[in-house]
Length: 201
Image 1 (cartoon, rainbow, N blue to C red):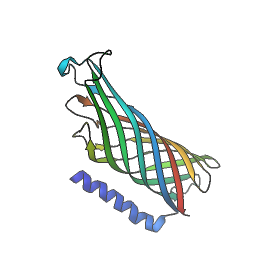
Image 2: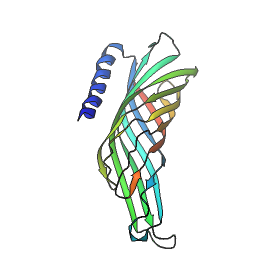
Image 3: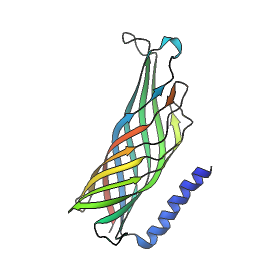
Image 4: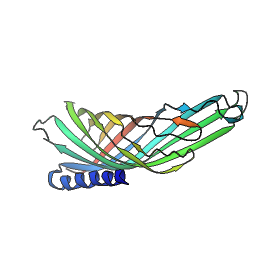
């Protein structure tokens, strides 16, 4: 409960700041895939010897607030993103490669996230940024885990066309997000295409 309250406090704090310092804001759409680094519980029941975790996709929709001149340096700006998203992945368990899967489980994790990044304009509309994006999983299906929080490190490269910005994000999950009856741990590594559409300037 304390973590949820902290999460909401961060969001409200940013919204109050943006009311005074907002320069640009707009819609944010992210989508892509990635990898999971799972540690399976072996040996498993029913003679299962072969395991696999396949990260299918990640999608998110949200809103971005962008601040310029935060460090009195024109080439540096700050992005604060808040969004809701989905991670979809499959876990497969086999007794042998010659047999059908004994267990083939499709899982979906629905989450909310808010976080910031510091960005530097390299050349004209091209920018590079680093940051952190704490997230909370509020609903799961499939491989249900008792792990709800993550704080992925963010790296991104983007180009601003004026009417929209297109970028590539990499998010490196730090927390164990998957702990189930068959999986000891699992961390998400996300690659995304990001589209930012300014609605205010």
